Length: 138
Image 1: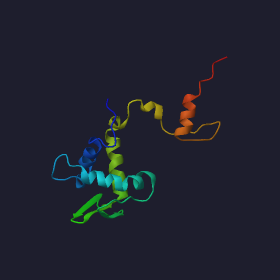
Image 2: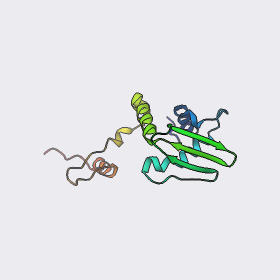
Image 3: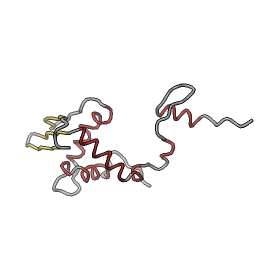
Image 4: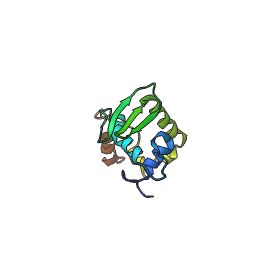
């Protein structure tokens, strides 16, 4: 199975399929979807500030807005996102077809566990647990 790359067209195509407001009338044109993702990615994934680029006039979040709204002007674009609605739709999509979202070898990245000896949790704790050999029975 081919692993997707960030510049691969599959991600923006899937994003447009889920959120048609990010599409255009031109098949294969992923410019708006890519601009949206570059703008909102860190804010959505890391609770950081939104990123703007040239020709992005305004970005905003508002829970009572449409899931995603895009307005294009000759000067650039304005994006508005409801994080509450967006996250609900993404979670529903994943839950409805969980097998699609499990990566090959995903058992190596099991849900977060707490290490009993250190009290640590998260990826590094799981990684340490995976690399520690099991004690041999006496």
